[in-house]
Image 1 (cartoon, rainbow, N blue to C red):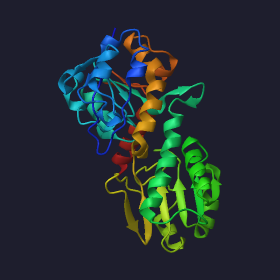
Image 2 (cartoon, rainbow, N blue to C red; image 1 turned 120 degrees about the horizontal axis):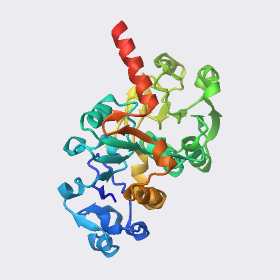
Image 3 (cartoon, one colour; image 1 turned 90 degrees about the vertical axis):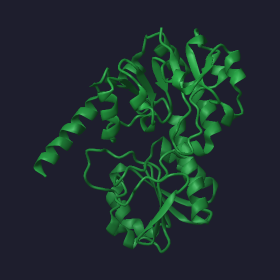
Image 4 (cartoon, one colour; image 1 turned 135 degrees about the vertical axis):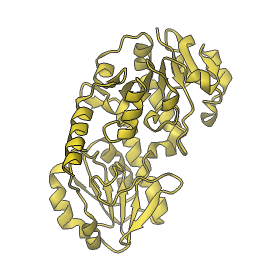
Length: 326
């Protein structure tokens, strides 16, 4: 049996919580759950409510001593260096895109299960969070823009869960929406001058060296246009994208406002927390029992410091090869 710790995220404006008492009560051994003091305060849930369902409420240090550490933004956590060989982490890691995170996990001899790689019968387990990312980004970005979408021409790049969330809100707010998929990138560049706003929802392939929207394309956009990069991959689909924060969400390049907050679902942290808690509970049970099912086995990125995920291996080899040539 494994203990599982839930620390409070240290990331700026990150109020999402991975689990709530109602779902802990469903576990066969809630006493193996460790919750950091004050974990549920932002949700209006007291420590006593967590204690009432049988889990242990303790200090941050004690929480981080659990066998498995669960945190939505565990890849950005400041505590990875405090963990020891044999422990595991469970959350969004994005190790392929971030070499520093990969190095911290491998150097520490840790095991990592990445939420970004969790699929059930082909559907991403966290599809709801992806949809919420699109919804939240549009709502927050237009606040920064100072104008409602009503009557504006908006291009949405992508047709997955994130794009669906963005389109849903844009339609509700009266925007004129045109959607482009991965096979219509050249068409978008041809028609880019038609749009007041471009919303990018495509998770970028780290092996690509080109872009969907180049800096030179910004010159052909409408005056005072805006780009909302929900995927916010640095210099990825949008060449001029640099991930931003909730506190400082925008910047301007060549007269185009850029919005690239990298964790927009945290703007609606209560919506996320209660929905996500229900989603991950079966997987918490599997991890606790040390009996991971197929979904967990398939999202195993690193095992005891050894990289398992082939995408990470291929990407690192390519980077090394490019580095040698340079």
